[in-house]
Each structure stands twice: as structure tokens, then as C-alpha cells.
Image 1 (cartoon, chains in turn blue, orange):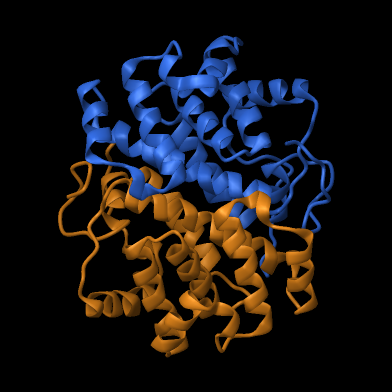
Image 2 (cartoon, rainbow over the protein chains, first blue to last red):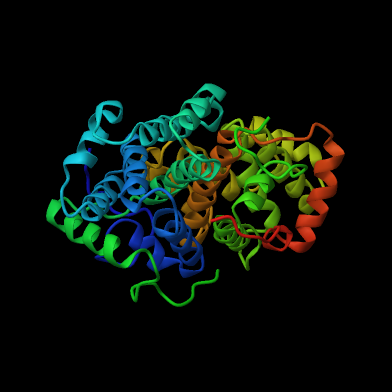
Length: 192
Length: 184
């Protein structure tokens, strides 16, 4: 469901989703941006497209429209602008045209989305049998966990959720090209 | 046994943090700002929010260590048990009770926080930053809890371990206690 409630606190106007929270509180925005940058764009044996698809899948399961739409677009732009693969992942990742390793990591991610305690040794064994390294398993767990944070932050404050899908495409293009580093819209200081 | 080969002897989140310092750095910085930075909510109150959410997520390590840190700040171990079990009848401020409602709902889903929940907190004197930080503390612990349990990290049984560690963290902060290294 997409709705446009008034945000729960006085966030800077006109900024969509998480960018309004970042603009409101730069002290917490900085490490959150840095975490997204390391996890989704840092040096890794998983491609950025693969990592953005894990983020999209988890955000979709959390019903966070802003996060799933923007990271869906970022994944698409990492793949040359095509939405086919990421949409297949959202529909049913087990039958999507992605590697068996990524499917196994996504199976771990959707369990983490419910609860970390849902992840069983057999899930890890399956990922390892498909060639996943310890760092890849670690990152799949942490990407899923981090989006359980980002999603709750965005929706818990009732931030602005744009309805215009074209906006998300532009956003995703920028995220894929420029990453998550600090934006000019972030205020400089707001210590309570 | 943890799901991946984590450095031995480091309990809870400290194992994966030592395994992957690149992600540990921003997580520690975020937790330091939220739980220890200059604030109108005391460190003890903010640790109570972290403890309450971690208990709701059934994360044994996080609720025990943050409960111990809260108890260290507030000098009251019984209060922690009360807040985890029945916060609306615990000896805490009406404002903190209202913020805990928001935190609990955020942990279930950000979408479940209502304008009424926020209005109740505001009527008890909560500021926009206090409401913002309550939502974000709850969200951050939904990450940390899943990180800790999703990798099946080790949690010590001895309550004294947590008491001693709590005194250290309360004194030095979170970032200061992380191992350095590189594993990209």
C-alpha cells in the first residue's frame, strides 16, 4: 500500500523517504550512509547488482515501498537499465535468472528478515555448497539486517513516499552511479 | 557454533565486528551517536529502549548486554526486568513509556507506528529529535539483533560477564572497544 501520510515529525519538506531523515539528523545520517556504501558498493565478490537485489527483496518483504522501489531501480541500473531480473527476484527469487549461489544467499536473507534465529545450519550449508564464502554469507546476513533497519526508519517516521515511478528510476540511476555518500540536503548539525 | 568462522572468544556482535571491520566502523559510530551522544534522553533511558527492542526480538546477547549497560547507568537491575516484561507499569517517566510504545511498534514494522502513538509521546513532552531517535534506536536494534542471531554468534551464560563488560562500555563507549583489521 502506498499512502501519503503527514510525517510523524517535522522533517525537511520535499525530500523523499530516507533522505528527509538524513537531512533532519546528519549525525546519524553519516554512519548510515557509510554502512550502505560499504555493503552495497564496497569491494566485494558479489556484484553491486546482486547486493542491491538482496536489499530490494528484503525491503519488499518489509513492505517498505520507498526502499524497495529505489533499490529496485539501483539494481536495474547496475544491470544496464533493465528491470527484468530484479522483478523476477521480487516475484520468486528461487525461479529468477540469478546464480544458485545468489538464490541460496537470498534464502538466508529472507529468513533474517523474519528473525535471525530462523537461519539454520542447512541454509548455510546450501550457500556454501553453491560456492558462497564466509564473507558473502556474512554480508548477505548484514545487508538483510541493515534493510530491516532502513525500512523501519523510513516507515516508522512516515516519510514522504513518492508515487511517481519515474522518480525512482532517476533515483536508482543516481544511486548506481554516485553511491550513498553525503548529499548537500543533509543539514550540518542537529545535536539535541 | 557460529555459522561462519568468526574470531574466537568474542561474544555476540563483537565476533562479526572483528571479522568485518569495514562494516563494524559505521555500526559502532551509529550506536555511539544514538546511545551515548549528547542528548535530552539519558544514556540509561536510551539503553532501556535498546534492551526493550532486543527482548522483543528475542535476542539473548543484545538484551542481556544492553540490559546490563542500562542497569549500570541507572543503578537498578530490577528495573530492567520490569521494563522488559511490563514497561507501562515500570517506574519510568510517562514520556519514556510513550517512547517505548513507539519503539515496540517500530520493531514489529515501521508501518504500525500511528499518529496517535506520536501524539501521546508529544503530550508527555517528547521532542521531534527524541521521537526520531526512538524510532532509529529501535530500527538499529532490529538490525543488530538479526546480525547477532543470523550468524549464530556465541552468548556467554555468566551474568557477571555482562556486568563487567557493561562497566567497560559505559566508560569507554562502543567504537573504542572494536578490534582493528581488514577482511575485504
